[in-house]
Length: 211
Image (cartoon, rainbow, N blue to C red; front, side):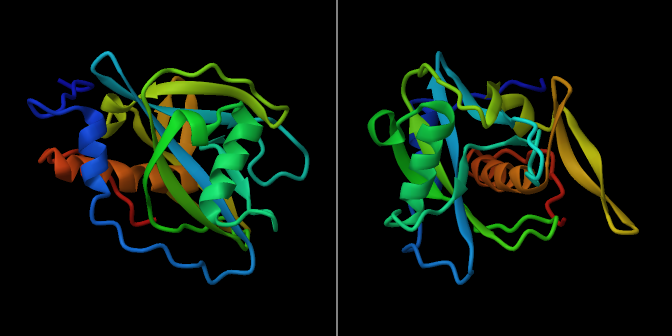
């Protein structure tokens, strides 16, 4: 049934997620003039797995204004590495201190926005053991804990029409209670779901990540 997901007998989702990144290669610098980092934050609670999404506030001049996203932002000169960037930005945006409350278990492939913004983004994956209280900054309109199971099995899968100049593209997306997740956030989540599905030996919906 769509939305049903269970960890293999004798294991937890947290243990399975750690296995997803057990063969992680050493982290290398990003060869880009501008870099950023985001945090894919996962919570295992009462036998289910949830992830944290934010809806960015509407702000003039912000290319991601109003988008559904993962917490994160640009690297500051004072950040020793991009993991520090992801953790600092998460603390600033939603009041969650991942250094204290979270466990960094790995990272996903570097991505660049499709809208032509010249920046490379590195996603990191974190595990939480308890649901935190969040304190949203002015940059964040709301934060949502979203069950992973329906997304993993393809529920809510749809498309988003993206226009650039005189061209239009149909991009894969998820509809989560009327909110569309597409673009960079979609690609990051899709890579994680593919890894997780493969580990659970589930065929999954075969989501299209070719965009």
